[in-house]
Image 1 (cartoon, one colour):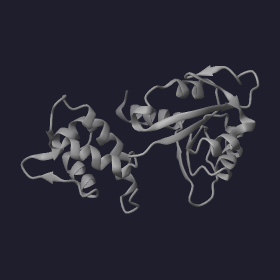
Image 2 (tube, helix red, strand yellow):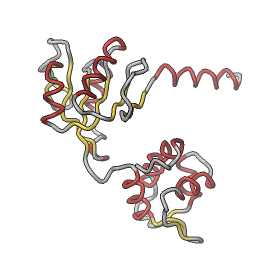
Image 3 (cartoon, helix red, strand yellow):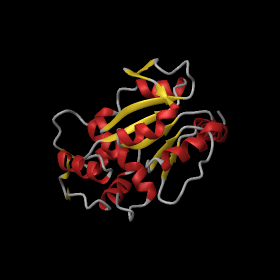
Image 4 (tube, helix red, strand yellow):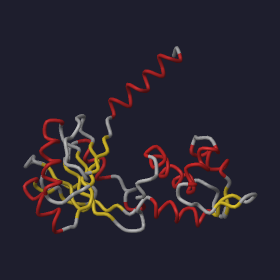
Length: 208
């Protein structure tokens, strides 16, 4: 990914890519207004964001959908596949493992791990849950690029350290804690309670 692209713009690129898929079948071009309406931003923001990619927009025509889709895929690194391991086979980890939408974007869940011996061997998303002791072995043998942490908070830091020591450089963290990782490790945190609190802030502000 081009590090000169602002983080806020990067966060919107997947939305634009998804928005292209929401266009009517067979539509070959789209305007910034088309994308803005689907993505929930204004058209000026769309044009500014896509300008960072050198996107081939044409005045009076807009963007060629196929070309823009490829530009976005390249910017997001989606032109190759990525092996993903899910650590934690509780309710959340099981839901993630059963989700069938990862493959369409080039992400392949190659393993689901858990420390609970009673969960080892049970099936999640068509694959058997494997023992946590095998984490390092699995990361190396299956060339894992991304680790998803869906463990309780108290276990998350240790798992992050094991993943990064094994060679994983990108982590998606669902545990409600801030991970301490070495420089060069990318961590995205998904905190559902924080998102709910933001929603309640807006509810209160609107008088609902």
